[in-house]
Amino acid sequence: MDGAAPEPPRVSSASRAPVMTDVARRAGVSHQTVSRVLNAHPSVRPETRERVERAISELGYRRNRTARALVTRQTLTIGVVASSAPLFGPSTTLHAVERAAHAAGYATILSTTPDDGGRAGVLTCLAQLVDRGVDGVVVTAPLHDLPDLAAYLPADLPVTCAAGAPVAGLPSSTVDHRAGVRAATEHLVHLGHRHVRHLGGASGWVETHERCAGWEDALAAAGLEVAPPLPGGWDPETGYSAGLAVAEDTRATAVVASNDQAALGLLRALRERGVDVPGQVSVTGYDDVPEAAYYAPPLTTVRPDLAGVGALAVRALLERVAGRETPGGVLVPELVVRDSTGPPPSRARVRA
Image (tube, rainbow, N blue to C red):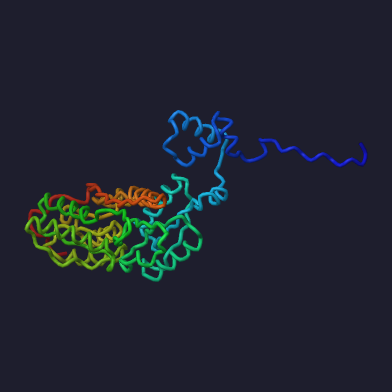
């Protein structure tokens, strides 16, 4: 009819995002049952949970974070304090934390320190994340400068640490670096090496101290000389400099490097000086970077379970968010034996 107001368009269920009542209708359960499934309530029967989860998947239902936050006062977000240093170990741990958080239904907000874990950088990152209203924080940045971190935290902020130095009062999930390097050194001792040098990591890092201690443990247990560690770092350049020194040390028949990147530089220096690996000097690394199997020769190294560390840290954090205490955990790494290690030469090397 002319002049009549047009009828407003109808909104079909297909043109809007599915809501919880749609899931309940599809699964043939109540709205409350869907809520219990979404919140992992233990009272839901397995067959009911499976039916609800199937309906969620079929409909493409996504939780309304804003509405949930109003009810639970939780944002389903986790803050992560990470180092900006482009190193394999910290980067891998960070990615593992993000994967574990997302698998648990949480988004992550990342704040990176402007250095390698200094007090000011870590505390600034924490303050930024608190302002964002996160439910909790996982710290993956090194904490050797902040062993009293717990004293700076809000009383109601759940925090856990992944890798790095332990902090009193906070759950920490980490790798037993000492055990890993001890295993690598024992491997060399069992091959017959009696003069095993150690290429240290960057100064100030707890990983550097622990890995050096593992080397010392193995040599002391075998009654062998513990020579001063070679000064090093986490990069190929420092490994190269150490390799030049090892090439001149005709007693050394093996080197335990603090990480694979330093071992890479070490291998190049030895090769340039005509020192055969492993015929004259055996070399081990740490981290088992993806390229380690393709070094020349393929590198014997220690493989830390960094994915496991990230998952443990997130699990511990979510327990604290739920009001339950948990101690975190320590994972023992695996020794991966490749072609860069072998028995020592039958006689002393000739100086190049």
